[in-house]
Length: 63
Image (cartoon, rainbow, N blue to C red; front, side, top):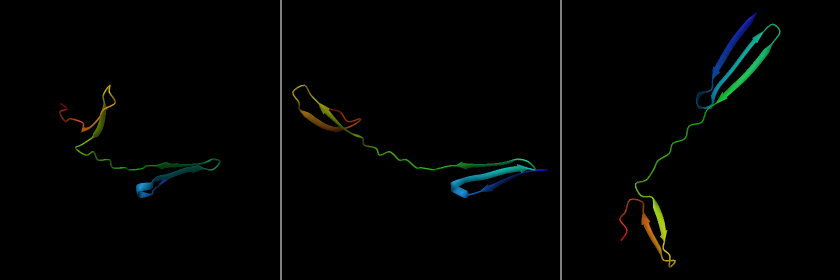
């Protein structure tokens, strides 16, 4: 006598279990969603030998 069951918990994942006459197993799978976005400007600082600091965005021309 054996049975396998799974319960869908939506964004939390799945809860599954199986059993037979002499054994019981329970397992839970979790999932997480995360959205990332990048902006078109990435700031940076250039430090020269005389300790002069130049702020710029990655991709900009520095003169």
